[in-house]
Amino acid sequence: MDLQKLTVVTGGAASGKSAHAEGLALASVRTPRIYIATAQAWDDEMKAKVATHRDRRGSDWVTIEAPYDLPGALEGLAAEAVVLIDCATLWLTNHLLAEADLDAEAERLLAALAACPAPVIVVTNEVGQGIVPDNALARRFRNAQGRLNQRLAAAADTVVAVISGLPLVLKGAA
Image 1 (cartoon, helix red, strand yellow):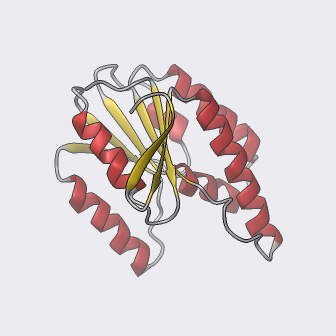
Image 2 (cartoon, rainbow, N blue to C red):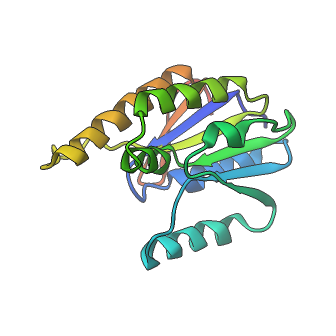
């Protein structure tokens, strides 16, 4: 199987979206498999989550840590590779907490995705289906994530929502 240029895999927390995205990359005929990690492990819970993801992937992946500079991580990758970014939500969170210009960072990311010669799978969280957050920072994040997800989906060839571990193709073919 070969992938389209840009695939977006979205869903709620612990929905199975990362495992589904990894499965898409593993089913691809392309190598190497590049995993671009955006998480920063500040506490034991996040450290355990990162370890679980790393163990599930195994040693057949090249890992690049890019909590802020996703565009830089995408530069110079070979067209023969397959790239998995996990995840756009943590990347956006990092920029929000750093008080960066979120629209400018999103524009840089979308340009880098368009320029990347390898097919890219982007994992992102759907955060807008819950209750309205009770504080301004959480509302700002929810709105920024919603805008980023819309832009990613518009640029993508394929969009898959994962709900309870089940993929639902929203756009294109998976």
